[in-house]
Length: 161
Image 1 (cartoon, rainbow, N blue to C red):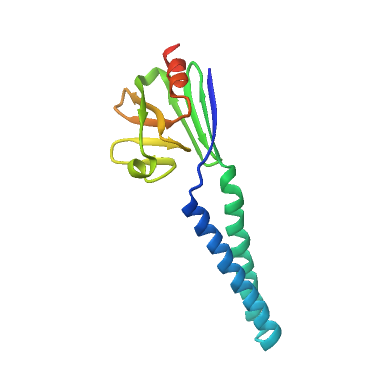
Image 2 (cartoon, rainbow, N blue to C red):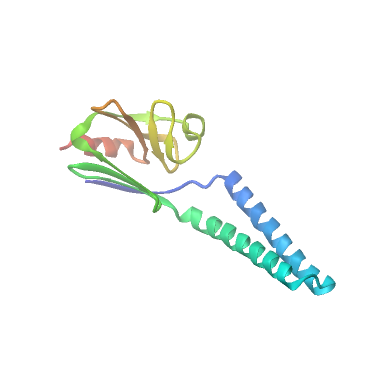
C-alpha cells in the first residue's frame, strides 16, 4: 500500500492576481460607501453596489484563503490507483489494466499548462507540485502521469502485487 499527500502549488502569479482583485474590490467598496455618505445617491442603487462589491471581495478572498489548502492525495492498493485533488477531482485507475509504469521528469507549465488535472494532446496528468512523477500506460493506450515526491516508492508499490 502506498499513500502520499501533497499541497497544491500556488504560483506567485495566481497569488498576485487574487490579491489585486481583492484590493480593487475593496477600493470600489470603500469608494461607494464614501460616495453614499458624502453625496447621498439613490439608496437602492447604492445598496446594490455596496452588496455586489462586498460579495466580490468575500468570494475572492475565500478563493485566496482556500486555495493553499487544496491537496492531492494518492492511494495505491492491490486493485486501484486513486488520486484526489481537492474536493472536485477524483480519478481511479485499475491496476489490472496497467501495462507499464516508469519514472518521469516533466515541466508542469510547459508540458501541461499548470497544476491540477491536466490534459494535453497525448497524455493526462495529475500534478500538485514539482517535476517528478510516474507515467502509467494502460491496455487501452491511455497515458496518465501522476506527480509524486517519491517516484521510486510509488513504482516499488506498483511492482509488488
